[in-house]
Amino acid sequence: MAQEDVFKKIVSHCKEYGFVFPSSDIYDGLAAVYDYGQNGVELKNNIKEYWWKSMVLLHENIVGIDSAIFMHPTIWKASGHVDAFNDPLIDNRDSKKRYRADNLIEDQIAKYDEKIDKEVAKARKRFGDAFDESQFRQTNARVMEYQQKRDALHERYTRAMQGPDLAELKQIIIDEEIVDPISGTKNWTDVRQFNLMFSTEMGASADGAMKVYLRPETAQGIFVNYLNVQKTGRMKVPFGIAQIGKAFRNEIVARQFIFRMREFEQMEMQFFVKPGTELDWFANWKQTRMKWHQTLGFGAENYRFHDHEKLAHYANAATDIEFRMPFGFKEVEGIHSRTNFDLSQHEKYCGKQIKYFDPQTNESYTPYVIETSIGVDRMFLSVMCHSYEEEKLDNGETRTVLHLPAALAPVKLAVLPLVKKDGLPEKAREIIDALKFHFNCQYDEKDTIGKRYRRQDAIGTPYCVTVDYDSLKDNTVTLRHRDTMAQERVNIADLNGIIEDKVSIASLLKQLQ
Ligand code: GAP
Image (cartoon, rainbow, N blue to C red; front, side):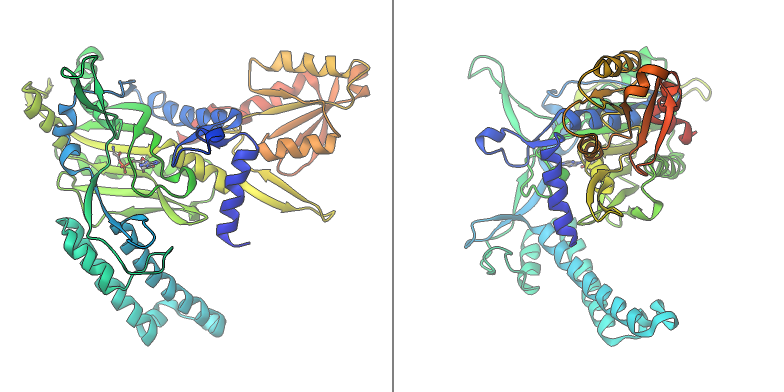
């Protein structure tokens, strides 16, 4: 099945099984805004718990905060967001659709990469085991021509974005003969800058109202609380502050479902370090964060670092952790060495000293910062994409199953009485009453056992138990495992011991140590 079709199926699966709904659904939705349903919120909470505990429980020197969404508007001036948090936009006059100019050019670069990959794949098929890919790439005329065009375009684009030089971005679109995917025409407007922050007014009277922004990142809430936390928590550098919260961006082109939203959630951690040590800490956090991702068991080959060639003026190193989505490798998390830019800017704009006094060396300095920033929704999407499978069974049937890591699954155990009578429902409820304090259980008595198993497979429940007539006599049940569909007879008294450790967030956290 084409990856595009797989992705469409995942999107509709999310809706059908209560994971993600379009926002304001009964009013036909609101572009790029989504609601999480009864299963989605559980999965999302589990992702957040895994992140939060990995930061705050596993590091003695990291603490959390929860800062407000509204902040003093000068914060966004100091951080650079008022002047520079822009995307270059371009309209097509025929389709009346709006695009990000940088995305159009990046897609064009990707097209060259695809052409090269196609040539390589064809040659591999032709030459079999004797194929030497690196020699082929260096000598094949067609591949070399594509590579040259790609590299030239990439260099020109990178230079244009540095300014940014908006006229040059438009010229690239014209020179590359990029057409609007909808109208098929090259009837483009000029490229303009578009600020991504949402604003509103705070205050009751119209003339006294103050323009405030919905925060476009949670990080600034951490920076402006640096002194509060450092002093009240008696924190010693190096230390970190973690936060999970909503962020808002008026994205020009919101696409790929919950990948790019206008209201989304971030999990960010700012790690304050001594100047000069920041690149070691950057390398350290790269490894720590990659391990956090890979511990979910989705396969190391599905992740990669994308080190930034073009650095923001305040950063001295930056990388993205990318995950293989059905629409290609995409950024899920960013790790940045942000120097002392943010704290220095706030010091300048608020007029107060924001420093750290090192009692060991008797010196004061502005700490440097390593930031790890991951989108909850993108993480959610990567988990769904990797877990979704339409599995062909030996009997010719197909089952749709979510192979969610057990610790992230919304429901851990479904308890199913074989029939709705003769005391079996009561026995099932007894099991739930004993286990509901340990993990999320669900009761289901409707339809055949087979159908009920399928319903649980579709939401990723790792375990089901069936209560039958023997259960009443000997207190045993059939325990069914989601991935293998294997069944075993176990004592009810042993259920907690078998399941609890496997479905707990602690089981993941232990692997991080
Ligand atoms: N404080 C740094 C910062 O905000 P970013 O690369 O703009 O950096 C960090 O965002 C992460 O937030 C991204 O890696 C992505 O996972 C998530 N993110 C950013 N914009 C998003 C959007 N419009 N929708 C969903 N997630 C988004």
